[in-house]
Length: 285
Image (cartoon, rainbow, N blue to C red; front, side, top):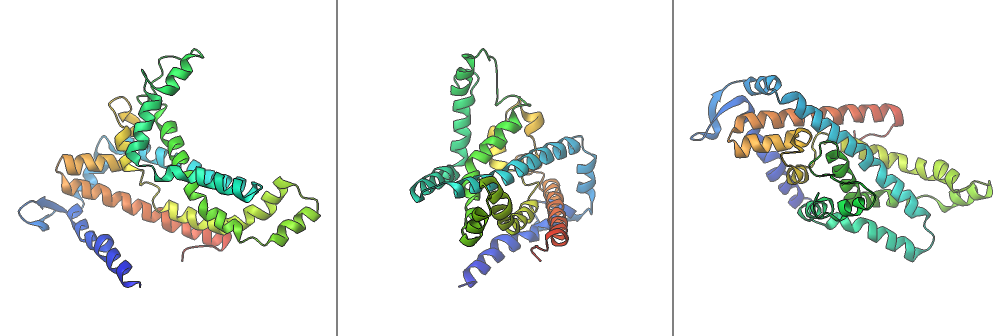
């Protein structure tokens, strides 16, 4: 039963890693992935010395950490709220309504943002005009880009990501809730002393996994939301690699940038795992 999964992972996850050597070679179209002159760390140095380096790092870290904070905490809060909903039907309806946006295509999500936030015909911008707020361009503003991106990400994935926390809460012994109520605990105290401790191991594991891709901001969504007005804040490493590698045909340079991004993510993963292991005795290895 594991053979298909192992084969798939070997072919599509480990097999393409052979192309990492392009980061250290001068790519030659005639020689393909196996040829080209060895140039060592030339392209890494080129990226570090490029004028775009610090702006790309700033934008990537800013968007990634903002999404991480809100995208990590929101599912926890939603799972706790759903767990407190009285009535099985209402709980099922709330859970279903919150995780359905996860199945909407990214293209459709960006299209919805354009419909709602268009400066001329957007529903939200038209609504704000009734309160005297005019001339707002959410999609073209460098100030509004990150809040729009993060809030739409939380809205789309919060319900789906809360499922694993709801599963953890379902394993809590009902006697703990009964004992807390007998001791006079209110709902907030039950959440603090029963629900949150039960979620801590799951929170730690998911946080470690999230840190492994902290710099892997959503390429598709950011790329679709980009325009000339918000480019100073929306240009991140993933979109820059696409433009340099696929559009600009600088395969070795883009491979070096992508490898640098992956190494940083791996370092974050190891550090987060070690910290979690020392603090909570919960870790991936």
